[in-house]
Length: 457
Image (cartoon, rainbow, N blue to C red):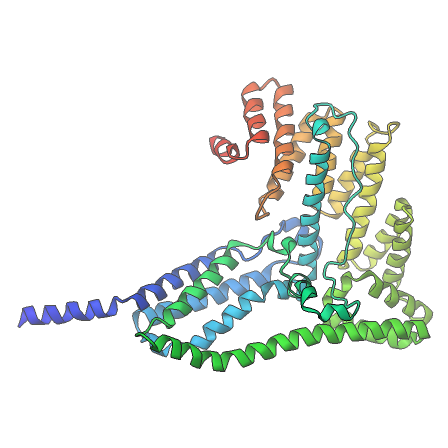
């Protein structure tokens, strides 16, 4: 009797321990990792300065933890055939739409991500173009490039009918849905783990007897696809609708219907926050308010600064940008232009042989970092300027800041990190610390040595 009972118990245990349960358990474990690790990563000080944060990422981590708990419940207590499969399909779509959510509803974070990415590309180009000079200790003959131009963070405009051809729809993914290199450069591992975990859980739901899994999947897709299709249609048509209204604003502005332009622009900037990175939209908004005798002083100052910036009168442009920012500190585009205007002044000081060692360039680059923390171009230029002035200790400190910022990147720029470690090596050399000088020099030329050297410290 006891032997029969033990056999039956063993059979039940074996019946529970099947591939469905194992797969669902594995997916739940991965979802826990998605709740532990961050979903998006950007320098904290820059986020605070630009008036934003990544709190929304914590909300998604809570969502990942909730679905992990659901997975465990159905693994150990409830039968899998009663799982809320459509809910897991729903979270799968939400995860895929995270780039769209960031681009459209968190433009400050998107602005930072895209700017850091473009700056990294620009610096890498400068290092490669001036390799013989950047390897020289004194760098007396090196010239700095102009800062990367501020471009529309999300180019949502439909310029002509060719946009609706299939060959042009790559911009739908890169601009409308946010699947760009700049944004994915800062995606955290939490997003990746959650996506993988949900896919594993969905796979577990459809591991059935031969033939039943396909029928169950088809049944769920008949319920799921119409809803997803409707969601995508609403997203696309909302952006197309915004384009139509934006085009109408241009026509109304040309006709002198300024009060309508102001009213509609105010509503559009609220419902489509990404328009706050559109220079033309902001200029029309500012000018219409001025002509309608309802001026937005902050926008008018920004428009004046923008005109001077394009004329390369960076000093006066910075004055107007400062005035605008003092009135509305939350306008991230104004802060970006102010940083670029002062950065241009610093580059001009550095490239001028008469003022190369005056310290004016260093002061300008430091001011940029106050306005735009962790600005890669300002850090890189400041590191070079300090080295040219013989301030190797300060140059090494800036180099360490560059190394710290690069940790936020999914794929750090090797050439930029190489230069940072090189400046650190120079400082150790001038301090007669040959052991550290040699170690940092190895780091500057061999990326595989970074981790090993850091662990040794």
